[in-house]
Image (cartoon, rainbow, N blue to C red; front, side):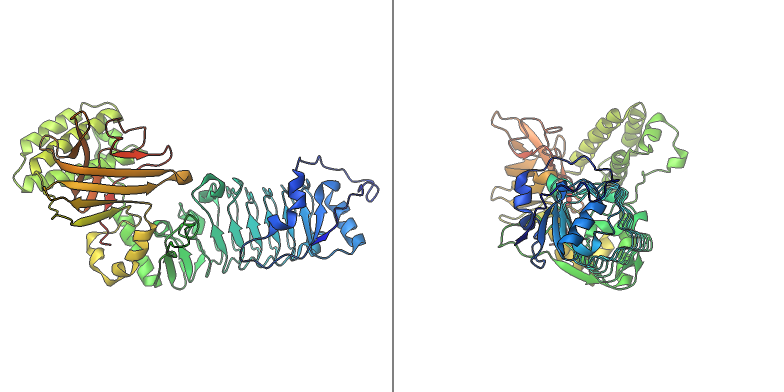
Length: 511
């Protein structure tokens, strides 16, 4: 390792320059700067290590580097906020800046192949038109960074150090072909505020976005997708993307969370642009946020609450109850009069909690009326998973669905398997992975149908019957999420979660 800490004071190099206050930095960072800048899979560094804290301005640093005849450098520390960094660019080709304050810095139009930024703050930095092929941003804040028209093929954006923030980052028109965005579910690996980044018109051909959160249609408007890797849950937000070639569905987090060497690699499935468009249309229709009635004609307070902007869960309940009632009515299990009586009761609600309780009570009555319809032979198993890509039933019988099914199954962050017992009861075992890698577990033996409320229930130690799950239309509906916020102590013997995890309703995907 080449090492030159530049202990000389930089004063006198540029007498008129104003030095920045230098942030504190552990000397261990300086001692291991080159090691910190090493990235798995990237070429090893062969660079001179510089203590950036010894320089008050970018111009001073550039002059010192020129005098020393430096080539590739690792700059550790230093506050260069607001500085024009373009004079330093030639020394960073194949080099690195780590633990540096680089807010509002100017890198526009520079040419720096193989540069690395590690554990640094590039908020509000100007990198417009910069040519940085194979650049690596490891644990870097890019809040409001300007990267429009930047040329960054095969770049890596790796979330780390609780420092990766993408809020307002603008990649419009950038060349990001073959780039990779690596985000995780633990706090230190979050790509924070990724929903607020813009990739409008960017070239994302062969890029890997499978662990990057795509949560808004506008962020990918006009972005070129060709052999681009995306997660199944992102598809519904790609209506504005330019699908110029095949898209590769990939199980997100597969290579971030799984550290066990025996864990299989993430599943992938290649789909054509036409298939991609069909999946987008289908999943959006299946996840349409609508009540069972026309919200433009909502009259009662209850109906207006159900149609409220953020009352998505109430609309879900309303759709489910309407379908369940139709099923029970067709089976001759309930009367129109009973439904009208319930509607009259529901319409007396004046708040959302009242509505949730009203829907829950009516669904209990309807499921109880329909009776026990779960049939599992002894040792027969059915697994239910997170429905990461909701699709209509008609699409589940197609060759396309069969092709993407392994990806959907692996991308699920939760699963529960029901098993038939010799005595006709059912067992349930499940696992869920939540934010910051908090986990859930479910373990139930001897659950039986309770005709009083339509739930499959298990017996607690004190003999209390605890309602736990239902099966309806290939869905597994849970009475409690396992999270402390809605799971009573008697249920926690069967289902429990860490603070940032919970079970949701699951579906039999067919895998």
